[in-house]
Each structure stands twice: as structure tokens, then as C-alpha cells.
Image (cartoon, rainbow, N blue to C red; front, side, top):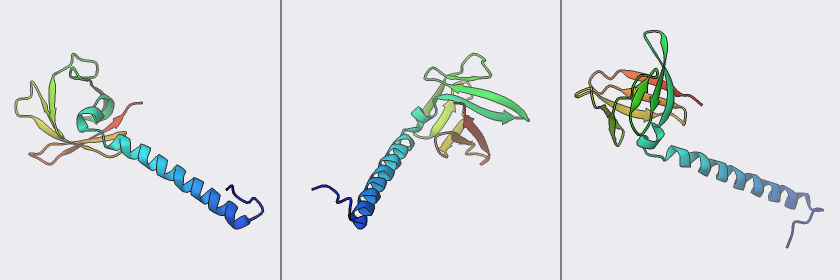
Length: 118
């Protein structure tokens, strides 16, 4: 049975139901991107600042490249990132949304912020 267009309450309920359904679908789509593992979320180009200078960092499956230099191999286990030539250099990854990444040095607690390049 369809909505009686002569009944304002029925029309409001139908519109409210549609709006709620759309909001839930958008919420589910947004959460799906946040549920990716850190190894997938890390991939891509990120902008950061080092010593006051803008730096472009590109993470691929093959390695990480800083300002278009040859890539360096890295490994990632859970949210722990380590670099092949960095010895015991480890960073803890935290993502604040789809476009913000924070790398934390577990020894000093220092946070380094990155913004995804789109």
C-alpha cells in the first residue's frame, strides 16, 4: 500500500524514513574506509613538514620514497611500521580519518603528522 499524499503525517513519515535510510547508508560507506588495515591505509602520497620544509612521502607496496628519492623497503605489522635500513627504527601508525596520518616514535612519544595528497 502506497503513501496517502493527502495525509501530511504519512508524507512526513515517508520522507523521514527515506532520510534515515540514506544517512545509515552514508555512515556505513564512511566506516568501511576506516576499517581498512593500516597496511592498506598507508599506501599513497602524503605531505608533511620537516624542518619547516614541505616534504612529499610516497608509500607503495614496494617501499617508501621521500621527495622522489629511490624507495626504501619497509615492513608493517598491525600498526607498527619499521624501515629496512633504519635498524630498530619503529613508528606506530594512527589514522585520524581518511586523509590524516600520525606516526608516533614509541621511544620518545614524538608525533609526526601527515596529510594525504589527493
